[in-house]
Amino acid sequence: MRSGGILLPISALSSEYGIGCFSIEAFEFVDMLKRAGQKQWQILPLCPVGSGDSPYQSFSTYAGNPYFIDLGALIAEGLLTRAQCDEFTYGNNEERVEYQLVCEARSILLREAYKRFEINEDFGNFTRDNGYWLEDYSLYMALKDVNEGAGWSTWPEALRDRQPSALQQVREELADELQYYRFQQYKFYQQWNRLKAYANQEGISIIGDIPIYVAFDSADTWANPLLFQFNENNEPIAVAGCPPDGFSETGQIWGSPLYSWEYHRETGYQWWLQRMQHTFYLYDIVRIDHFRGFESYYSIPYGAKTAEHGHWESGPGLELFNVFKERLGNIQVIAEDLGFLTKEVRQMVNDTGFPGMKVIEFAFDADSNCEYLPHLHIENSIVYTGTHDNDTLVGWIDSMNEHTRSFSNKYLDIHDKSTNEKAWAFIRCALSSVAKGAIIPMQDYLCLDSKARMNTPSTVGNNWAWRLQSGQITTKLLDEIRDMTALYGRC
Image (cartoon, rainbow, N blue to C red; front, top):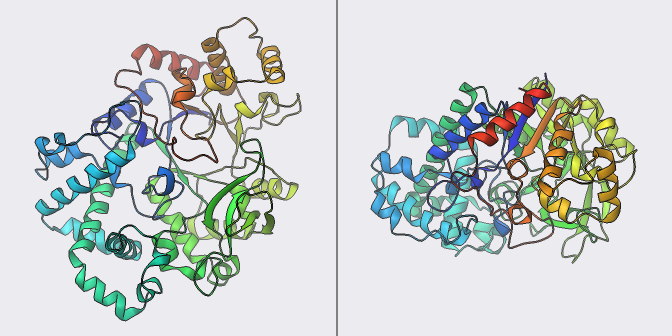
């Protein structure tokens, strides 16, 4: 069945208090999606942000981002007052998240809410059901606070190496801190489950995103060092990234430790099964980031300055996905199969049966044989105008080189059109594709320029910050989106 959807991160909603969250604005956006005839809402990872405020460098693959907890709901529950929330400055630019200010305010306010929270049966059930990840995460975060934010690899040896007696001692000493972090996650999941249930009730499926890797400084690596390519001192031997490509001339160094796939195979991929099962609890459909890394992955020596001198190593291949299907059933996955693709990668994607991605912004740099051009799309795929790593359509159009501009003008017959008209022509190009799914970033429907770009790969400091403005999405725009979505059979 053909479908249409919109990509908009939770952080980009126009909620109060500095960042998008599970507030009334999130529920209103679901209503907007329904009016616009959309079937899917794609978001970015919900995990706590780490280095560079990136949701792809998180302190946990399981935990939720406490910034997304709706303070308004805590006010309604009597855990906070509006006066307390209004005491803080969340930033002077409503179009950008100022993460440092949001972090400082949330840290204080959530602790105030915790002081007033009364333990109940539902909280007890949550902590019991999620103990397999929640206990390590809570202890990790409490110890990170004690160590002034330092990564676990620099902690005292007994804690770094998780000596049982040392861990038992700090569990007792930091018992209240652990309970605070459990409370954070309880409120996150309580609010997210409410929002997701509302979306599903209104006929909207949530497409979530699972990063292939976890951050070196995370509860996952600290609690499970055998899962990764570490030396005897629990330091990475090599890290993840990708070679030079269309995003970066020198490649990308992500800094995430690589998996010890032989160990995962010996354990029946239990950690991956548990991770995927949890991810499908969060989302209806899962986009697996950097899907090609499961066939072969790019290994960069730890400490290298660029990714130019890395090399490829073999991943688990189809075996992992056969285990998923055997144990988890008919899961709905989107394979992020972008970048340099070998025939082996293409074969693996084809053998899984998962739809891959077609990105319109990649379609016009070469010639009429480029697989991202709509006349070469296949039904079992999802088409995007761009992803969170691309410039907005308007920004991309404004910065096109002469070949791309000439080719796209000729292909779409848009020589004399304005920039905004061209942007809508590219959207039409995507929606008219034979691909069964079409996802359009909200910035593209709004015809926003490069200032609304979500992420520029291989850069740090100005990403993940763009936000919608209240009233920016009009009923006129929603009806226009619905008309075009319906025109191409995606409502």
